[in-house]
Image (cartoon, rainbow, N blue to C red; front, side, top):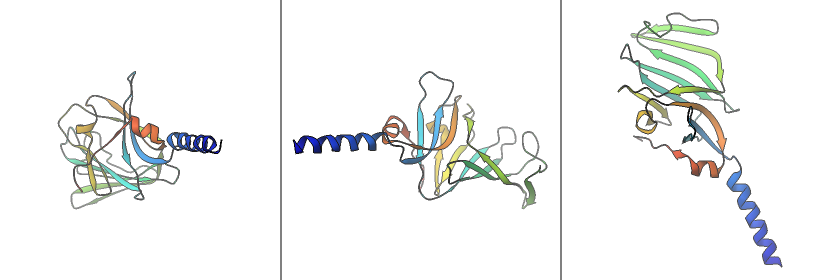
Length: 172
C-alpha cells in the first residue's frame, strides 16, 4: 500500500513537472499555418539581446537592442543604422532620442514596451540574426523563409519544450 501511494505521488509530481511552465525562452511560433512549429532560445540571466539584419534596400546593417523585462515583455532600447532613406526613421518622435556619431544613427527609446511582435523571414539572401549572450543565431538557417513568426518571451513547460525546436547558435 505504501509503495502504491509513493508511486502515485511520484507520478503526480512528474506530471506537474512535465506541464508546469518553468523554462523562460525567446519563442518563435509560426503563424498563418494549420500546424505551427515552435522554436526556442533558452533564456538565462542575461536580459539584453540584439536583432541584427541587413536592410534589403540600403544593404547596410541595422542593430536593434532589446531588454527582457521582469514580466517577460520586450523593451525596445535602441536601433542603430547608417542610412535614413527608405524605411528608417530620420527624426525622433516623442519618447525617442536620435543621435548621429561616426557615420551611424542611433535611435533610443525611453519606454517602448511590447508583449510580442511578428517577425517575417524574407526570402532574400540578407542577414537576419539574434545575438544573445554573445552567441549568434542565424534565423534564416533555422526558420522557414517566406514565413511569419510570433516573437515573444514566455515561460513554457518541459512538454512544450520537447515539442518545439531549441535553436542552435553559430559561435560562442
